[in-house]
Length: 108
Figure (cartoon, helix red, strand yellow):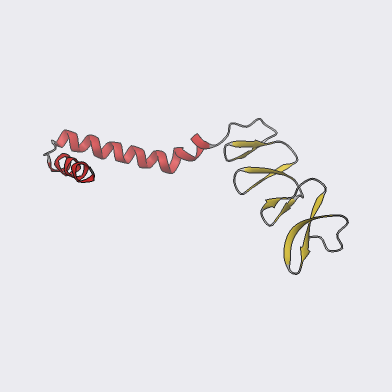
């Protein structure tokens, strides 16, 4: 089955292409590249309200920050590029940042 697919692709590529056909393919490739470079990011971004921040395909409300490009976290609750759950704080333990509950002695 894979051999038949490969043969069909090879036949399609081996057919002669007119100048007009080649220019259409070239123009399509240039348009696709331009869209990927300049328009693709905006097409995937969320359409957020004035007081919200775009975060990938999400919108973070006021008071939250975007983490890892697609997750909204409470401001000040970001620890090692992750959100700390409610009731925890970001602290340094043995040189590593981690979320811990309680009253930390050394916060990050």
